Image 1: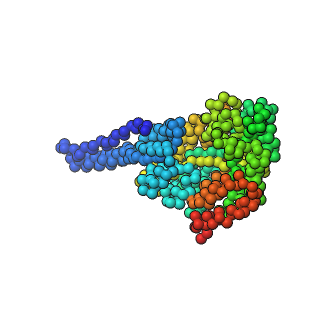
Image 2: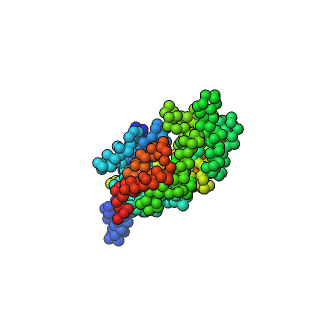
Image 3: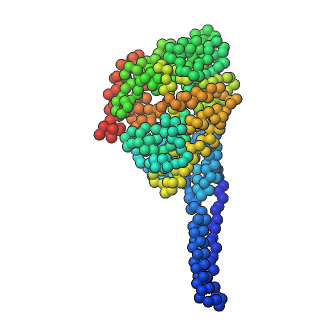
Length: 461
């Protein structure tokens, strides 16, 4: 594991003060010498206090990530240690099965000083007491302009003892990852279909008409060779029609209500009626990402993290807003990774400094310039460090607009996610079944709400 080299600080000793003069001067001279010696001693003591460097401490931090991500992480750690020579950072890289291993470390009181967390793991770990309430550090920080940071990035790491999204800060975002619609410009050009607008989300009807034109059987064998869209992410369609998954107080399941069930029905019909999306059988040999890269999907939903990979593709591509039936940019979810201070850390102030560095301007600039993320700060989103003129996508501002409107996914809502597990287990039956969305989710509602109450009893107290 790569470690940054740290300069060892040397203690500067204060100059020794000479004692009283041993000459034959009178009492006046002796008194003068004693006063001078006393003054020098006090000055020497103050100098020693001022010049003594801060005690050197070691803190640890964990993360996962592929080799390219690890290099970015280590580069930020190098910058931090140069700026804070009294803090040595031990980097614990956990490339596989991170959540399981961190669960064990937290339970065994051996977790690092700074815990790297997905926004999905955060609710469970904060309820377990793994994270320190860092609100006082956040509010006192001179490096974090909360008004300039994405609200959707900050809110998901707040906790009030029952739900996330409100209360004190227990972590800060390393990034925010809003989702957009990527599209293959070569397919659009070949089929004579206009590109979607980068400024305004298409309505469902407009998008469906576009996807139908992009779905073709090129060789006439009765099998679709190019699909208009990959499987869409249903949460954004629900929100983009004014619907909700849970009520605001998180006590009721609302996917059966009209705005939400209409969205789920539209997605169902995209695959089963209009056939503009590959079904599960068509996805057996290739997943949607592979199909897009192979030129078999005209559009696909994804986040900023896909950009480094897609820049290697041979065909031209760009990004546009995910369709939204009500015209809003609340049309998808944004992902995030956060960093929190271990509640049992022996060096909470130094640990917060590292969290602050990653989440603040210095760390954000380093990570953004390497193309992996959208910066935490709105003011940085127009900077060439992020926009990277001359590189794809042509319209990076789409990510920024999406970041302003999109919200955290439902996996961030509550510490116990049994309700969401039940929902996900039943979604497959809905997508391949014959029942209407309104009927299906009305029947599922009692079980989901039972799971909500059993998994999160504090909500109902």
